[in-house]
Image (cartoon, rainbow, N blue to C red; front, side, top):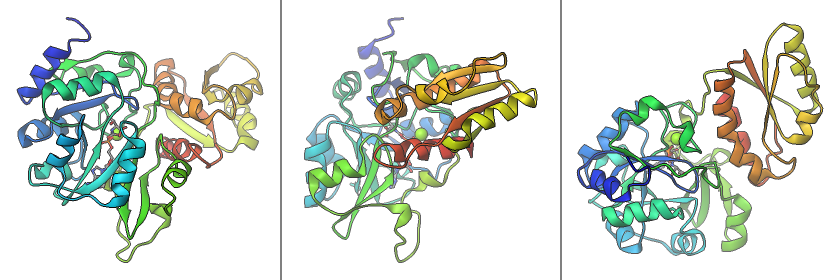
Length: 327
Ligand code: TXA
Ligand code: MG
C-alpha cells in the first residue's frame, strides 16, 4: 500500500474509521470529530481513560465556527498569531461536538496544524479530526513513523508515513480566563512567544491556584511518556557521577544528553549514548526527546540517565516531558 494514500485515508475518516497521520508536533491518531462512534474508537485503540479529552484539528475557519460556540478578542488574537501551528486553544464547545470528545466538558480544545499532510487530510475528509498523540496511553509519543507502535498500527484503518515531525514535542495548550492566558500544557510555543505577540498576562496554570483549586487540563494529571526502560533524571552537576555509579554497579546505561554533556562521559563498555543535539539549542533538544526515549527502549539497556534542563523558554516543555517520563 502507498504509505501516503491521502485519498484512502480520507475515505477511512469518512467511514468513521481511524487514521494515524503526521503533524508538525507528533503523530496523531485521528477520527471524525463530529461522530461519537468514530471518536470512541480512538479511546479503545489507545486504551485511553475516557475522562481525558482529545484535541480537535481543523483546516479552516468554517470548521472552527462549526465546533465552537463563542470566541473572545484574546482567543482571536492567539489564532491570528499562531495558527496554523503548534498552539491548542480551549473554547466553549458547540453542540456539534459529541461529549466523548470533551470528556463531558462544555469546552473543546482546538488547533489548526501547519503540517501539509495533516492539513490536506482534514481538508479532503471534509470534517474536523479529533486526535490525541498516536501512542498507547501512558507511552512515548511518536515523532517519526518508525516509532509508531505496531500494535496500535494494527488497530487503525490507515497510517500516513511521512518521516520526522519538525517540533517533536506536542502543542502548547492554552485557556483564556479573566483576560489572562493560562498555559495548561507547556509545548512548542513558549510563554515568552505568547507574551511578546499579544502583550497580555501569561501564566502557567499549575502556578495559579484558582478559587476551586481544580486542575484546568485533565490530561496533565495522567501518567505519560513512560519508556519501558527505567530512567532517572539527574541534575547537570551529578550527571557524570550518576552514570559512573551505575556502571560500577554492573548496570548497562543508556546515557541521554546534549553533545556537551555526553562528551563528559567516557566511552566504555556498558554505555550507549543518545544525543539530544547541541547544548543550549532547546528547540533541537526538545525535538529529540521522544525519539531518544524510543531509542532507549530499543537498546535494551538496564537503565537510562538523562540530565535536567533550565526551565526557561522551551526548556519548560522539555522538563515537563522528562519529569513525567521518569514518573
Ligand atoms: O501536538 C499535539 O497537541 C498532538 C498532535 C497530535 O496534535 N496531540 C496531543 O493530544 O498531544 P493529547 O491527547 O496527547 O493531548 C491533549 C491534551 C491533554 O492534556 C488534554 O487533557 C488536553 O489536551 N485537553 C483536551 N481537551 C481539553 C479541554 N476541553 N480542556 C482542557 N484540556 C483539554
Ligand atoms: Mg499524548
